[in-house]
Figure 1 (spheres, each protein chain N blue to C red):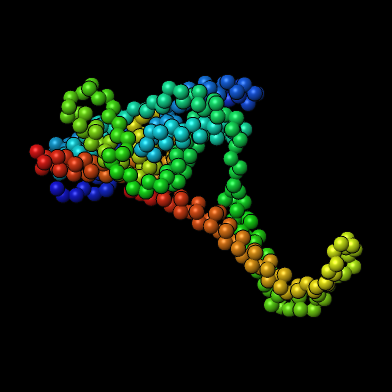
Figure 2 (cartoon, one colour):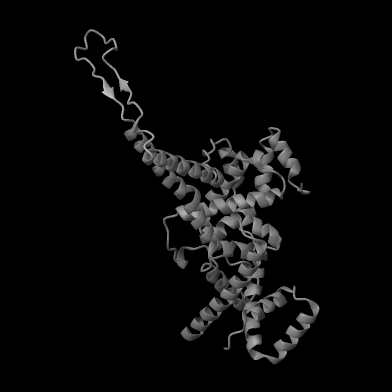
Length: 185
Length: 176
């Protein structure tokens, strides 16, 4: 059993206090939504998927064996739910114009820095959903490689290799984008 | 630009992450000063690393929690059988079909007396004038139907419990 900060809340929910689940949702909604957005690249769909995942987690709370952290178990449900949404989605090809491209800290840095982030986010849409999620979780610095592996249904070594390769690919993509930009100037 | 080996690229990424151990880290720093190809790639990867470090969480809508709580008592979607149970059922279906086929080909059912269902003995309401006939049940035909049903079930289970999960996993494991 892990020293899980959510344990008290889980005990309250399991003893019938449904309102305690609102605290769980409040606590984990940002990460859950972020995972869904990284997979689906579509905010309304990600919101629906994340909500579904919370409901599934609530309905199967009795099956959570507490061997791992509750958050890891929950985010794995979010990951699987979002992947299912992705598979069901009829949009086989999604153009970059319709995807969610985050521009973190816009206005905080120089124009060059903002552009760089924009191009990296644009290049990220070319990665597959598992790599994109693993990379984002890695850079959120909240999860260990083992936790990322558990969330994304992969082995820890595989996660490490894929994070490395995804960054190499982003480096290549960024170089191409910047070369194209330079040519259009 | 000359391509670097995969091992060098991985070391470079570990160097950027700050996880490369001391002697290797110092060696890498030295190489970066003298090798322009390596330095060029380092700059590309560092650009990606710096941009990714700005990754933040996304905020869902303001009524997210309320929406979840309102839907909390929705009826759960009935669970489909697990892969393990599916494979067990698949094995059972194949075994049953195989056993029936073997028994059929050995002629076990050839000497089984065909039961007759006599419907003439049933007392019908008076307003029904047409009498019901008796008919013979063909055991061999019944066994053939069972085998076909078993094979259809086996194909369905093969698809649901083996092929779909396999391709789904392969898709996820696909290295970009």
